[in-house]
Image (tube, rainbow, N blue to C red; front, side, top):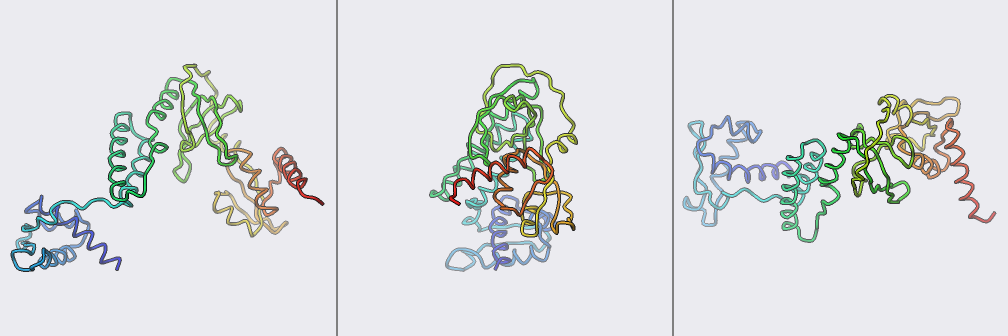
Length: 309
């Protein structure tokens, strides 16, 4: 069934294309539609029996390709390209948004305009679903961050933290963009509230405002130093191996002495680690970081205090 659907979709694209590219060679058409010559000719032969009801030579599509070049006629009902489905336009919207982080200002504006057109198309195809790209296409905000990095300026941002489920306002001095192994993008910046460097995931920045304040010049640690500083060692048992896969725990090795596993993970904030240990109820431990261990113990004691003995 899937093969037939793929062929059907290809033919729907092929007819309007051939109608506007009369005389194209079979070889070139094969390259454009990424099919073998055998499959292309099979599709062309199928067009002989396609057309409007009546099914005489007056209603059926007429195709010629004996000389190695394709011409098509009587294909007016299928001469216009098929419309994008809701799923297809949604995929394009998401893909175009990912480009906004890596292009110049003029290209960003063109991409945002194209996204707006695709949104209108999608809502016409499926009026029940409304696509909100306000949090995806952050063109003005991205321009402010770009300018702050170039001119060494401070910014005020509203940042959402899923670990605490809260929205906070912070003043930062952006330094550069970073990207993790999964393609997620961050802005690496000095956070004045934390008095340290932090990584802010771009998709969690809800608003950006210019403070018109010049940022002091910071000594930026190397990426190796950042990785070492933001990593923490974890111990986990067999039941928590899913956690290792989901959160990208590195250098995972079996800890024979305690019949479990030990590894390291890049730590974006302490709250994430505290909640992870508490949520897994003893299946995950942090053996070496004294401050984290102390905070986890305090949180656990406070939680137990809510229950009568």
